[in-house]
Image (cartoon, rainbow, N blue to C red; front, side, top):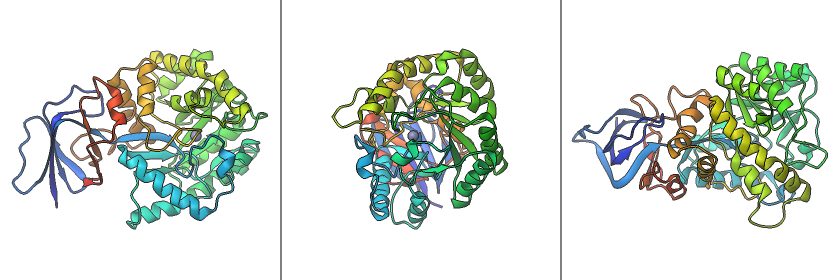
Length: 398
Ligand SMILES: [Zn+2]
């Protein structure tokens, strides 16, 4: 089996441990065989040396929409042909991988095209991060569904919710996404503070998904929606905008290991966009939510809630391949750079239920690692630069 030996000035393990200097990793096939400062290369190993750089696990973005563009108004691409969507998927996936993101959790595709796209990647027709897919979003009947044709599976009542979950699993879903509250990127009469699915419907979703070995990600802005989702036993809370309104819910999340994926970049760009064109009702909802999102992020940190990195890439101006912006916002929001890196590596892998093989550099783990110039522990914004190298399953892809 092929041996690859990678060295750099330092190595971060992804779990927040002290940097290993110098960083040295030996990869055998698609796995890490060993690592450490004193490791010596076997004679037959192929060598890559990066003198002024840092080796760290490939980043994991826990919330993207790879089939979508990120234009100001999502209605602009709503009627796009499926063939165009597939090409977009390929472009967005490649950009994301080149930016150092080696795993994405996609929390809402279009027409299940992402499952076929993944088959294409496996056949060598395109490059992509590891794809952890939900298929369609399972949601109550709601106006937001009309803004995103092919992204929602509307289902009402526990039995229909169970059926909708099974449909996603049948199509190939690795994770189930449910709507526990209204959305910001929806018409004005869908309100993010409003709870959506009832407790019995959320219970049906989690029981069905967990019974099939799939985790559940709950979109939830308003506190009642977050509370309902946590009570139903979901595995991650997406956005969590108004969590600070009930610290007891944050305490429960911490105790049960339910991760928050704060998606700070999404609300920031919607509230304070770099260009025109965002529908007024969406911008208004985002401006109302923004400060709450910051307060909830800080509360979650204080309460010990696991925080996993997710951009919600493809909300307005939230472009694929600029995923590291979220780490910069997390540091501005109160994290240390090392905490933000851990949110995008070990904690993200745990949120996906894949921390036995992803998200940190350890012997036996998948060899997904990136090499970035400089030291991101001093300056997390260095992760915004294109990495000097990206290894996916031991293969140099960038
Ligand atoms: Zn989303």
